[in-house]
Image (cartoon, rainbow, N blue to C red; front, side, top):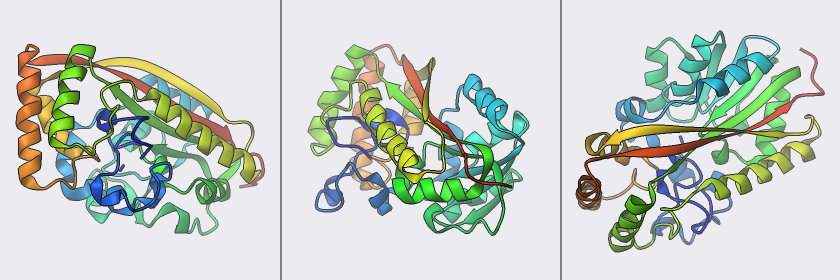
Length: 292
């Protein structure tokens, strides 16, 4: 479910802010306002089974921290998608209701037993319900900062937890350099800095949403959490995930095939496998003004 200015992040972040807008978006909203890029935001359901199969999961330490800090098990997962984060939260003891804009993604989550309500979160109706936590895995950048903060505060009981989190991916330096050349050649409008660390772009994104939480007046002081971990990939595994990333979901079939062939050749030249370094960043805050 899954944008930030082109010099801040890149396509390897798993459908988060670094999934930069392509040429068709250049005359549209600024990249610093990813919630206005609706076509990209709603493009991840093109192949929901692939998305669910290939997208990385979240560190167990993050999941445990969310469940521990929540005053109860009732969780609202914003942009539940296919249920990747929701399954981890459920396994840790959470009782999860999903909100999702894409019926195709929601269908996968429903098959796994989740109740999902179809709506954009900003217009979703809590209908008097109060939740112990509002979570958003890889999706909160698609939410209008001010409207999202207001809606989250409306949905949370006093003492409830807000937690938005993102996986940020980094290539090994030599492979990053090779891929940068490929993207410059095949996708010249792709973010110039995609091959480096995207964490800086996410920190700026988190600062923007933290400011919105403060301004909303329903939350205590926001906090940021960080978890570092590694994930090995083979060429085949990376190419399987490649079409699910936001930079690629709307590419013409021929362009995607050319890109996949070139990326695969680069990974093969590096030994046919690599270890990705992930940084998982989370923005959390406690609701202070709602009685459930």
